[in-house]
Length: 119
Image 1 (cartoon, rainbow, N blue to C red):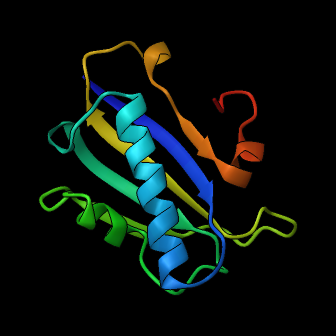
Image 2: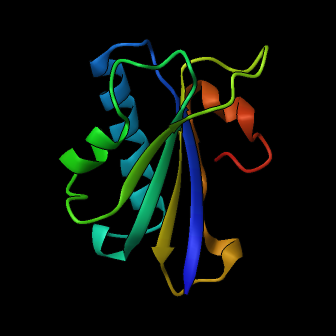
Image 3: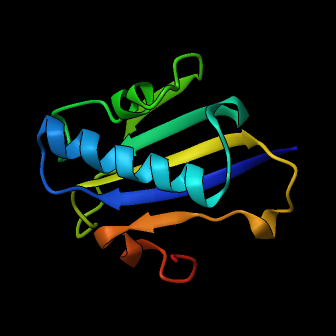
């Protein structure tokens, strides 16, 4: 069964280290909370707010072992007043669990994006 897992993190700044460190934290937390491995992951779409241009978030996933997983990076829509410095992901996974058991992950300031489901 294919499920989608969402997540987001607000990173410290528009520099390579902040983007890679924050994305690593986000991906690791998604994997741990949902008890999945890279073998379970079909693909991941990463987005970054327009103020994050120093590095591709997918680099962090590659460093975590996502070598044969299709990854895509895109820019979020530049909505006035939107939360700055946010990396989001949507991972498509092969997981045999009902939708209500999927844990979406919102970290740091990104908790404000989904207070209804952030843990």
